[in-house]
Length: 329
Image (cartoon, rainbow, N blue to C red; front, side):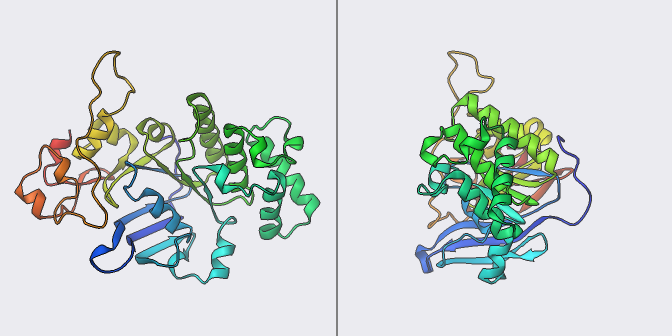
């Protein structure tokens, strides 16, 4: 474990969460029964291919789903029932208690206002301070995320910064009101490798210093291993495996987890053929009746295609959904 969590009440608790869009047979079931708890100081990595429901789950934790989304289950953040909070209470929760780093800061920032103004307005809204104090705090935040010439950068518009600078500014905005919970939606995906490493090191340092609970969504196993204490592997809207990072890498139990670990260039020799997972993720509007991974799994049998597997204990704090757990090893 990279970070030692304090044994107390969970900062985030999700129980049997379902999220769908639309009605009837054509409804898109984006999240299908996700449950987990996250305590102060812990980092949960959520790993999976595009279309597995990671971002929808993350936005649910912040109450950012569109009005037509249908939800079931419970989501509690810092003791607050997110799914039933009125709009005013949600606005108070966002930023001050839970904050989010979006995947693409160029679209997350408003292009017609300066970076300094956008950070300062967040501070003024939640901390009830004047503009001068808020701008001073904004400068301190830019310095915290290692942006050079921070005072001058306050006057920059988003398009005047590089991708790496914008992502650091996005992190500064997320940390503006000292949240207890930080949600990160693939914050390094759009960055080159050098900047990606810098952002990961920065996030890991800030998380440890501020003792935040973090949910870090990614499709890159290398990134997940670098930042996480434990990982939930998500497929077709549910966790098919969840384990501490060491157990997931060394003793993974689900065939999908094995496929993700194998289909990466990390550790591959030059000239070797890269192993891939055959097929494509399922249509979330037409999920198969049994295990959603069965059509792509070489170990699948009639039981897999007919009966959805329940979570099974593999080891300490390690569970997986598979009828043939040994097949994932």
